[in-house]
Length: 126
Image (cartoon, rainbow, N blue to C red):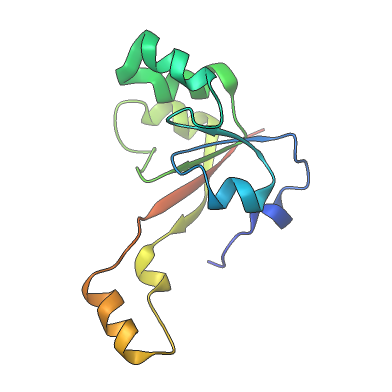
């Protein structure tokens, strides 16, 4: 599956993405951002104070972001039925797919100790 550039994929920059890492993805996608710790969107902090164990699913249900970027497989676990009904998996990003480097010594190091996290990108079903 090719890399999906949200900057090109999503033309409507009024759409929201909920994700953990507020940084690279929001900056380059141009999308409105709900980050899970509330660095760029303070409303998440209110959800955390109200119901910390369920703040992510509550934010999804209340704010209905078009995109979700999660290191978890949202189609597994407690709220899997909700996610399957409302979102589709758009792309899996696996760190092992990005470990190649022209410098073969660095490539060996990257493969021994990968630095990064696997993510899943979901899109809201219309």
